[in-house]
Amino acid sequence: MPQANILIVDDEATNLAVFSELLTPIYQVRACKSGEQALHIMRTRQPPDLVLLDVMMPGMDGYAVLAQLQEDYALKDIPVMFITALSGIEDEESGLQRGAVDYITKPVKPAILLARVKTQLALKQARDLLKQHNLHLEAEVARRTRENILVQNISLSVILELAETRDNETGHHITRTQAYVELLGRKLQKQPAFAALLDGAQLEIMVKAAPLHDIGKIGIADRILLKPGKLDAAEWAVMQTHTTIGARTLRRALDRAVYANIETTQESRPEALAVLDVASVIAQSHHERWDGAGYPEGLAAQAIPLAARLMALADVYDALTTARVYKAAWSHEQALAYILEQRGRHFDPAVVDAFVAVQDSFIAIQQQFADNGLD
Image 1: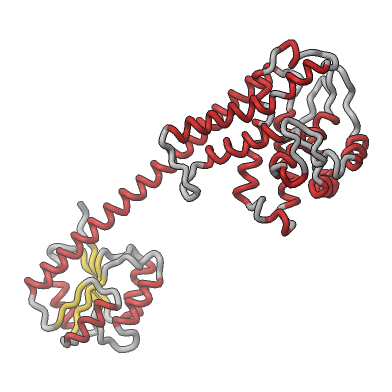
Image 2 (image 1 turned 180 degrees about the vertical axis):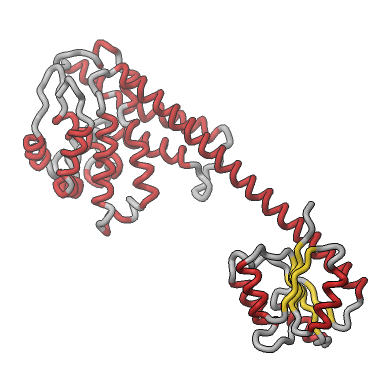
């Protein structure tokens, strides 16, 4: 283990010589005669492990030196021992209250000085080891967190790929609708009526939950889900159940996680649980209509959760502007006209207004993630 590095600061040459002679056989010792020099040494060279600091010095006294060290992030943890002729109880109390780790009065007894220096260096070494250990733990926690997030994302991707495999005409539907939801949310975020509902964390959760909106289609039979033509009334009734199937599936996954003793308080609830919670709401309600004519519950206006209202417009816009085997893609202008016509009927008027404001970005996303071969 390398020798500890000690800086002695005293304006009297005799004291410097005595302290240096006493400590040099055991430690690496540097010495200077003023507070200004001490700060310069500590800021321009390797910081010492311990400072022996005189209190009464011309110019900058020991108290001022200690105060500056405590304000310097790189130097604030260096232990400082006052060595001074001020021997009153109130002086010692003042020195310790200012942050010194020890207070030794002159004339110094060599054995006491050596013992106290050794003690303070041992304490610093212990603190340094603890700090390194904590940094290692923090790095390990960060690494495991990244791994957990990666596993979550991979698991979600597998589920979504499975859903898309069964409904192979969706193409980039998930990518586009997720981006549309984020665009609408960020626009509404600026309005006082929506600011609290769409603060940074809430909107981020909604965006992460959006891809799961049609997960319930996994439970729909191929003869209905993959039918190339228009569904009859009975088939349409079955298709509508993808909302409740998706919500029920996600809610069961959430309940299992809670049952497995995962913390669910608002302060410590994992984001993954919040995403599942919002995803179940979106899956259940993204086909509700502002006028109450939607499904599965016939909710209307503000009774429809905001995340579902955002997804409703994103989903319909994408369905209109994307080609299917049974229809051609609508132009943006045709989709815009339809959505404006449905303002206050199918869609939340505020969401429609947000869409109109960011429609150029919708066009850009639609073009960037076009379904080649289907448009």
